[in-house]
Length: 227
Image 1 (spheres, rainbow, N blue to C red):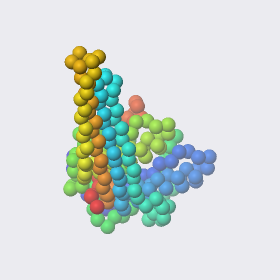
Image 2 (image 1 turned 120 degrees about the horizontal axis):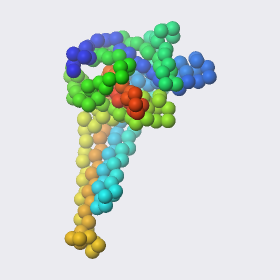
Image 3 (image 1 turned 45 degrees about the horizontal axis):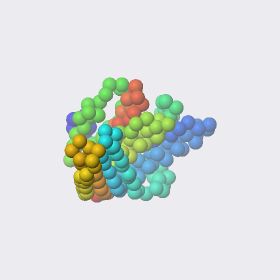
Image 4 (image 1 turned 180 degrees about the horizontal axis):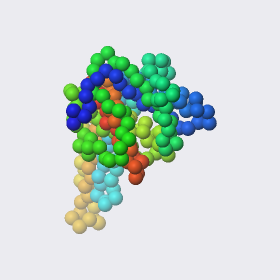
């Protein structure tokens, strides 16, 4: 797996946007998303609350996530640090505009294309590595959203959360058993688990994303280091 992502200092930050009536507006919004990814590369923090509840009934189950990301939201200032050629680095797919930008890092990281064009399911979707060249990895998944660009963005955001969850997690568990005469043995049981994770990452970098051609769900494989 590690041989598939060699170390390098030329990084690609690929931004996405919906299609606007003016092409320059689409490119501008895609550049802002690329700059947002670059801001994540500088530093991104996050907090996650995962609550899972199992009650006595067959359908008495909840599995809920709440998350918040923290990063420098003034992303437009980073655009000038990214290189791109409007003649060769802008393309469209599925009513979405993509802009490929480049950045020469001061140190080497695992590198990838940022996107996967092949239709075959990559191995890392089902068997993601825990680390690549000493960097933590995270696998983000997003079900199809109303717009393809939103699915892509949600997928890489979830990759941030996935890495943060590997750094820290505080489990709060509660189990209850209470009497109810309607049950055969006179008791109900419920379990509630809450996991709180938080952390800050540096060098968050997307290696590849893959879109399932049948469902349009998106998986994203990313690396990062703990700050």
